[in-house]
Length: 241
Image (cartoon, rainbow, N blue to C red; front, side, top):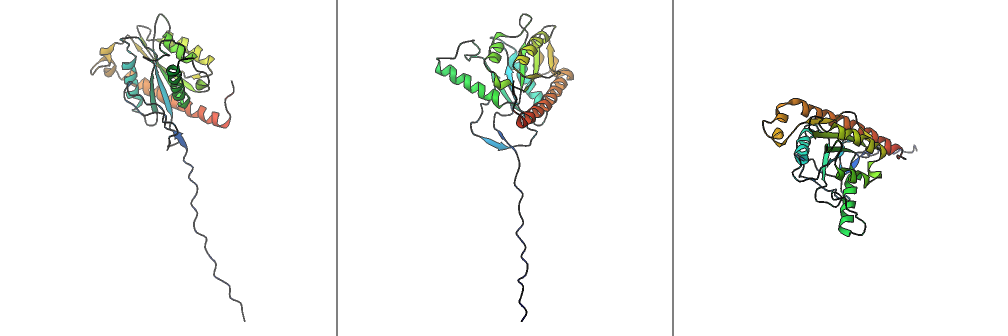
C-alpha cells in the first residue's frame, strides 16, 4: 500500500511592518504670530520623514513693536511651502522678557520649562529681530542664554528688520552668539529695510515687491535641508559639545 502524502500548504501572506516614523506634535502650522501652540505632551502622529518643526522666535518685546507683524508676514510666506510646522514663540509678557530670575518663582519656573520644551522639540529656529542701537534686543539675548542643549546642532535662520541696514548688524552679532551655543546659522536670510506697519498692509510695499517673499521661501527651503540633515546626524551619533 502506497502511503498518501498530504497536499502542501501555502503559508498565509505576511504584511511587512509599518516603518512610518513618528514625530511629536510640537505645534501647529500658523498664519499669524499671535496663533501659537504649545507642545502636546505625549502626543504623536504619523508624518513623512521630511516633516520639520521650526520655532519662530519674536525677538522684540517692546510696546508698539513691529515684530508680530513681521512674523505674521513670514509665517504666511513659509506656509506657501509644503512641510514645515511652525511654532511661534512670543516672549512678551513673560518672565524671560523682563530678564527676571526664575529660580524660586514657581510660575516663572513653569514658564521657563514650557518654553524649553518647545525649543527642544524644534528641528530648527527662525529668529525675527529688529536692530536696536547697532545690535539685537536684550530680551532675545536673555532667551538665548537661558537655554543650552535645546540649541545644540540645530540650524538657525534670521528675518531682520530696521532702518537702512535692515537689521543686518543685529544678525551679525547673533551669528557669533549662536555659534557659542553650538547651533548652525545658515547663510541665507531675509532683511527688510526701512519697513513700517503700512508696508505690510494690503497694497503695501512688501506685498507689491515679490523679492521679500521669494527670499523668505528660499530661506525656509535652506533651513529645512539643514534641519533634516542635522536631525539625521544626531540620530546616528548624539552631538557632543
